[in-house]
View 1 (cartoon, rainbow, N blue to C red):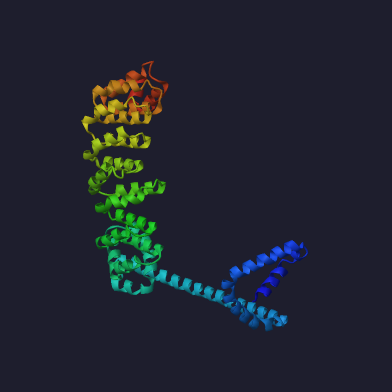
View 2 (cartoon, rainbow, N blue to C red):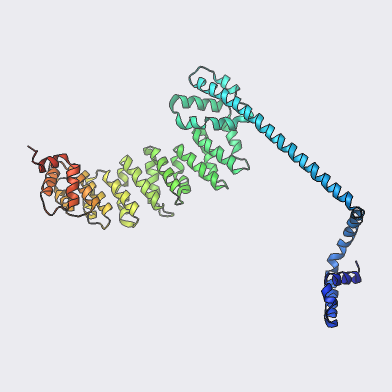
Length: 421
């Protein structure tokens, strides 16, 4: 393409300019000249391929009917191919569904028979094709979650004989994060100790989904050696993770208490408040006395209401007489739920000396304080029962507390109604 051809092309594209003034036409002409001189080094190499393509296409453009017919035939062939592909997919899906029904029916017959020792290990193993190991794992997953004892051991023996540890190890290196996450989940579900190193390595996977699944698997296996790393996946403040963390931590035995206390004491990075609250409940569940003063420190150093309530309730389970003075100081707390939890702690640990402190709460018109005071005085035995009777006849007792006394204490109710001996 020469300079003259390029200028003529530009002039045709900008036909309205030709009807304008001579000065405008000269301006466009000069501009076209400058653009061509600038773009020529890049445009010129493309000119030859474009000419060749045009020479090949040009004969077709002279027979428009042939072009239309050819295009229609192309569309028809394409539609036929798409229909054939769709039919093939449907046939494959139908064959697969029939195959799966037969396979599941076979497993539904063989696996229960194997668990009752009516079928041998070899017979069950022969009905699991190698290509369907993932499918068989999905089939066994509900059983592994629900059953325990000897039946679970027999299932684990079956899985090991089928080569699942090696199969899952292979899947853990798959390029799909969902496949790697499945491998991590099933390794944790099986709970084999030889799988611990592989699960720990998956804690450093590039996928967050795989890391979280591996962490949950390690918690299911009660791996306290890596408790700090495992709890990292729970640091986000998500309700489902909080519930899952609480469930898994409560499933641990006493072996979780020392590493969990070390995490509570750790300051860099500190545990989130919701996880500290769960830890307080775990300590209380095991009556872990070593954590007593750590819980006291948590209560006095935080403004988080839920954490303070969990801490005070946990201290009430420790049965440490040294805590009486601390509970008495919390009776006047501005949060009545915290004060009520402290009152119940006095009822658990206290004696007749704490009766006046608890009886004074009955004059407060607050549900939590009144309820906690009534429960605590009941726990203190005869001195507390006597204080409740006196409160029932005291005009300074709040109507709410009086109603709770009558509803919650049969002995006091009988005394106030004149039926007590």
